[in-house]
Length: 406
Length: 107
Image 1 (cartoon, each protein chain N blue to C red):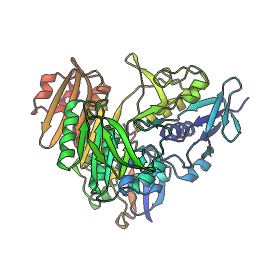
Image 2: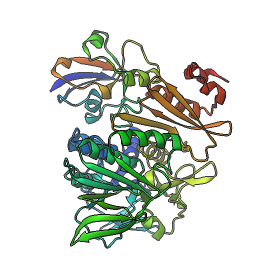
Image 3: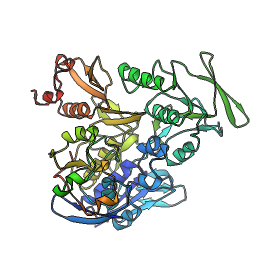
């Protein structure tokens, strides 16, 4: 019998979740991970949190100790870039010229930072991105009291970095092109809550304005002109305008692409011997092609792929959850608020939560320093339970009781 | 290094040395001990690193903060007295000999 060989392109959370789950399931074929970076799989969330603040040293980021891979017979190729998938011969070509055979292939290559408003040819010495450990190491060296930083993009990443820069005593400005911060991921009340916290800490948030021109002296950005005419002096610039899925490899291999690498309920691409998982995978969710850029999703999808490879037919069931840390606030999010029609605010003492409804259906919960509401909201959403909105408006109602409602 | 005993739900015992300053969760992760998932990596955001602390150790550990108590309330089969999230327990010399037991499952 032919020995199975699973090749996983990518060295992130989805990749290691898939590989380790395969071994936990007793899979005894070969496993090979092709990692573009020169690091063993590591955690990404701390890069814009405890790693950037210096509370977490690099070794603590490792998802598995290095000897794990040897003990579990998982081959890890570092600093190797996959350049082509030859589906006819079931081979992955690497930039180094090597060709690796596979029986099943997993594409888990994540997403890339958008460069706009910079262009590919821009190469400023003081303009940064934050997507991987290499970026984080460089950005970390820029955090100095009194320096001026402009962060382009008011999503969770941009705001997390802004809160850290401000805590380091930097003059921090965030500019967001949309009408408000967090437009893509949260409702206005959550944005307003953050706006106030940032304002108290002296972070300047400029919304509905965008970069018109970047002025530089030689390779260094000196100031940035916004469409409104504002001129912002900078010592450093961070571009945090979001990510886009890595689809080039899949596209060149003629796999179906729709908002990402399209997968079915078992996370198979349009070629049943190729799976996709994590940030790059686009799956059907309530009738549209959805991608989730989160660690929880990467873990669940990596594990689901492993189950299917091992022969346990398993459908992927999205249970979206996220968190972000900004100053002393931990925002936990369950569900996806997209398409909401109503938001219910619950304020109990210093705990605040926002409950997103589409008509009578509970879609998502944003909770600030309030894990109680988060955990209940998460469970309600997973169990497809939607408490009546009037009940939630009553702050004397213990929301835990909503779990036992019909 | 501090000696910690992790006991899986099926009774399998792992006695390992964990470096001071890491968390009890990281001790399990770095020694590849199954049963503690820690999806969020230690941010007290997911409640998948739940254990039952051995009775003798309950009072010797630093108190739970509100955040941890609230998360634990919705973990799988929590116990008021002995349940803890291992990402919230930092390893110090005082923890030499700590014993923790895994729940049947995390979520």
